[in-house]
Image 1 (cartoon, rainbow, N blue to C red):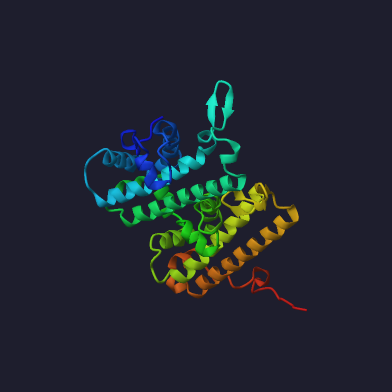
Image 2: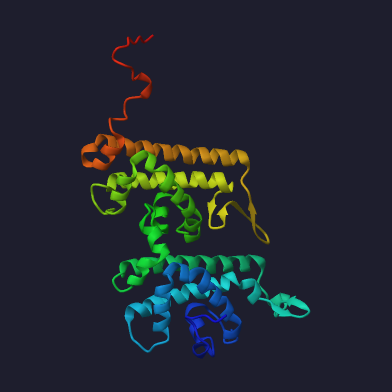
Length: 326
């Protein structure tokens, strides 16, 4: 497998690699190339879309000077190098022969376990966070990169109240981790497609999504975003039986030789799920109350909700019946 955004000719002494990752001249292109190609397939192409990826390859192989494409290429290369090394670290750090696998360095020159863990954490976090920067750059320059409009990733983001890691992090702190956001995106989509329409209707959802900068929508938009995030975490905890981190939803405890992952006890899990559900319900009540009180400003909601929902169902009776209260 050969990568498309790095070449052997440009890396006789790891020249390109050293721009994005501290490496020495012993770092060979032939050894690293399969890991780079795998990173392109798994991470870069799904983000950019095939059409934009092909245009970026064309630019990389040309002598054209274009500041925007140069910036995009360097952002993508930075992410690709770090994700490739993170994903393929185990195979890159050993020597494979017909007698099995062995390390090329002696034990006294190797890294301690905690040093390896810290390195992997840094490579992974930097690589995925850079993909967020790439997405933001493409959205800000969509007129220059119109191919991104046809990326499946772009479509998913634009049809969501939680469009990126930063938006999620504003509503619930995940330390800006794109990995957490990707883990939770599945649950976000479920809340937005299945749960939320029951409370505000699809027409109002579409109206807000198509005009999220409208001042009229901003008060209710923030409440809806809070509801979506807390409900998604509630659903995620229920299905995965864990807490939200970039490894999924887990407890992470540090011990002497590295990190150990422990699943949350059921009692603690249920307390946590109850908290997130209560928070989600509170935000749901807040945005439905706001919409009820401002129906004239939200005709889509007025059509969806009909008469005011403030009156409890249990006291609605026919006017021909006598009602007594003890």
